[in-house]
Length: 267
Image (cartoon, rainbow, N blue to C red; front, side):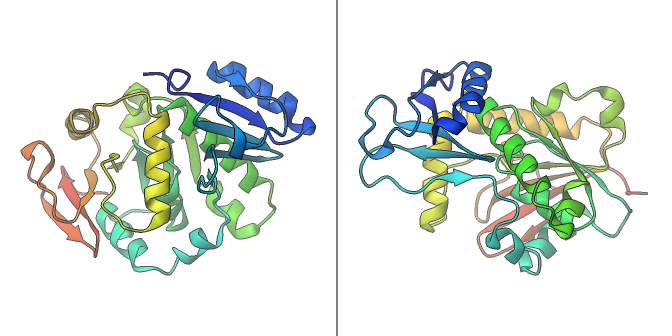
């Protein structure tokens, strides 16, 4: 199912955004709504990509719809993750400190949050996102963050690169230089936080594939067949091993765990 058939359109927030919104609509093969249309009263599509200056947001339409979701690397939430325990768990899982700089391929980049954490920890990260809408949101988010002029933010961004496509299409030469492949497949959210549920509902609206578990297993098999020293798979804390592939070890947190498949030492 394509994003277009799922009922998605591009909305320019104002007349000043029409040109950028139109270019995005043509690129993604989506319809273009009138500038400034009221999303609370929009019944043409259930979800819109809203262009407002440098910001690209995904939002549901209709009365009572939750707020928009955007890639915002400079948000307070992202800054809060710097000293948080999640950083320590993810850093330990990929092997931060074993080699500098550690080159990581995030095969399921999504909103780029874990990629950003890894880049903040000093890794060089290649963000791979095959869903065109998500890739566009990442592209806009990276561009908006780079234009902020924030020294810390720009320093992290210099270690991030976007590949708008399937990780399995990355060139063999590029893959040979990768130390770690990171996978965070999209599974039904068990997190009770409203923000997480809102994002998952939106993503499921625009995802082009509906084969999550099987596709995640195929990604894991591909990753383990590369020359990467280790593969790290994020899983719900109490979920079984994906495709019955037992990891070398696991690092657990409060709600999720990281299954680590070690192939060789990172040197």
